[in-house]
Length: 240
Image 1 (cartoon, one colour):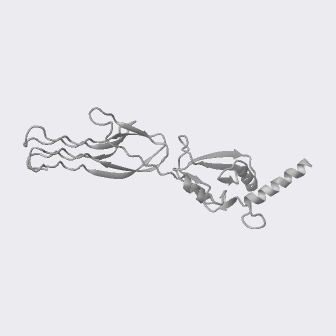
Image 2 (image 1 turned 120 degrees about the vertical axis):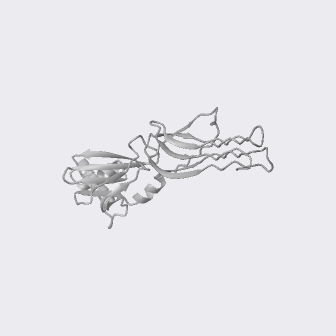
Image 3 (image 1 turned 180 degrees about the horizontal axis):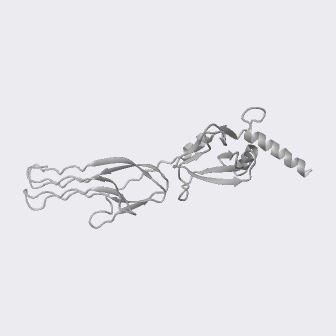
């Protein structure tokens, strides 16, 4: 009797996992044509299960593990189970994955709403660094990347100092603006230097304001400069 129940449960599970049309309305997985791409902003893991001899068995195993996608390799009896998470993963979990093959060697299965599930797992991260805590008595600010992906870095150099001993005041120059996209992996630490505004002239109209500080972003590990924006010049007598 126990054997009959086991066979019945397998049949019900197979119907609900694999059938995309027909009597079973609780379809979970559908076949994906071609290579399935998981991008690096999503924390994902792949578990290799060997000795799986059929697409049906791979799909059942995927359902039991609550995975989001699976790949069955026909010639090697290998079933790859793919899970994704909303939370940032450990190093190696956030990477581009190309699942399956363009040939008939691999059968790729995914949840019916796979694309919808991916959307909330793509995380946009914005961090703003100011000149608080920097300057002559401050320190370099650090940030560690916990989600791999393409990052937009925008920098502004600091304004130059004014000359306040002439009338009207000569204004210091504006700092430069710089922006660009950089691909960063999990665990990379960046050092951020935020430029300070130049001080005003001190003694007379013939002295100038101090130059504004530049802003820089570089890799902490090897001091590789990623982006820089120069500061504005200080104003002197008759010049801004």
